Amino acid sequence: MRLGVLFHAKIVLSMYNLTPNSNPKQGTLPLYISEYLDICDPVFTFEKLLEEADLDRFLKKIPAHVTGRIRYNPVSMLKTVLFGFMSDGYISLRSLEDNCRVNMRYMYLMDYATPSYRTFGYFINEVLADSVEDLFNEINRVIFKKEHVDLNHLYIDGSKFEANANKYTWVWKKATEKSRYRLFAKITSLFEEMNKDLAWSKVKIQTNTEYNPEYLETVLKKFTELWKLDPADFVHGIGHRKTVQQRQYELLKAYTEKLHEYVEKLDICGEGRNSYSKTDHSATFMRIKRDYMGHDQLLPAYNVQFGVADEYIAVADVNQYRADMDCFVPLMELFHKTYGFYPKYPIADAGYGSYNNYIYCQQHGMEKYMKFPMYDKETKDSKYHDNPFRSVNFKIDEQGKLRCPNGQAFHFKYRKLVRGNQYGRQEEVYECDDCSGCPYAEKCKHTPNNRTIRLNEELTFMHKEVLNNLESIQGALLRMNRSIQAEGTFGIIKNDRWYKRIVRRGIKSVRLEVFLVAIGHNLYKYANKTSRLRLAA
Image 1 (tube, rainbow, N blue to C red):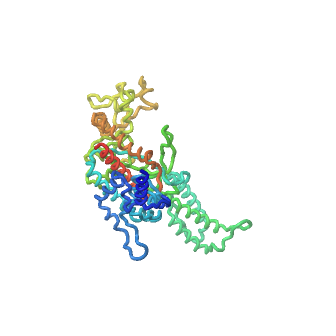
Image 2: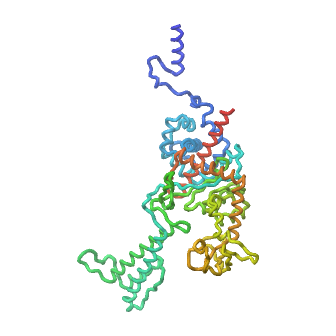
Image 3: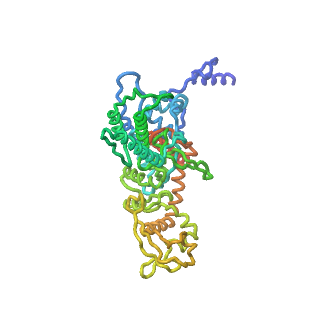
């Protein structure tokens, strides 16, 4: 018996290349690291899926190798980066480097190669940056084909992610415009003063209500030539008295520099934004929910939009708009560009319901399953819905005139365009003939004048259509699925996979980051579904 045990011990030691006096840490790994991994390991599922994707076309921008160290296999690098985002939700460059040294799955993908974090950074920023969206679509193509994903039902939601920027270094567009107009007044006052002093030259500086920096620079140059000024001769400090011309020159130069600053700030803001951060010019200040109690804070952020189909992110977009309402059309256009058609049923919450979006759906053959802002009050608050003093509840008599609960008729006054509506939406304004002595005046109106109401029959009809769609059995199921799939996707990304804040800066880099996170989420979902099916079998 004792001899048998000793013989068995010698066999074990020889298998692991050990001697009786050696340290176990001196043992070597098997020739193939895959022998240490389970056959159902997620890395094998991941690799098998990517074998069906055309990855080489995303790696064509890599320059040809001429001299120096042999570069790492770009396909292995790509697989390692994607697997990192699949495993961790978001993975840092340092973590990628460390995992390639100690994690068997990463060793398997990199064939024992250990790129540095700088190498991974160069690969992501230089190789993947321009093609990450196409890579996202290619991987989705493979997954959707395998899973038979229904793209006609698209569940839409958005979430604001805090930017990697200082929350106290903001620039507000309205404040900048006000400061610029105050500066215009100062410039005009200075020009009037300069014109009095230049009367001898018969040269007059033209004044206006607005100015541009180029005009001020021209005036400054001409002013210097007329007075033959040399800035090198200017005096400064205590005990020196500046000339009138020096003071005017310095004021005009300071105004020019300040106007340049205001113009630059307004250009950065653009048309669709009201603010930006000095740390990250692409980030817009938005209200972000900080906890479950509804407390919020004004922070620099990006509005990330996802369109989810069968729990997979089918389309993703990063916007600088504060409101989800403005993000719907760009997201649908991105969906159409990717798949060649529009979803039949785009389901979204009340943040997306607007006249513009309803018209857009109507024009592109999409059903209206987006709540409007007052949907909850319309469906849950009977006092609000049945309020007889709401304009939509006013009766129409046989002559086609609106009549209030007191029986007074409303006559048409005028139509006006709704500001900011790109489809030319108009509102019709009606005024009551006589509100004097009305017993319902306190409940019906808030001013001493006759009551006026604004109506849009087309929008009212759309709201009724949306109510009918959402209150049907199909609508109830779609609303339930939206809360599970769309909101659930953000819940998984933020709480389960701990991606709550943007790491990179600049809209291009942020889009790269969000698409990598979206790819990782879809791969994570696919691996989990595959694993559950294997266990069920």
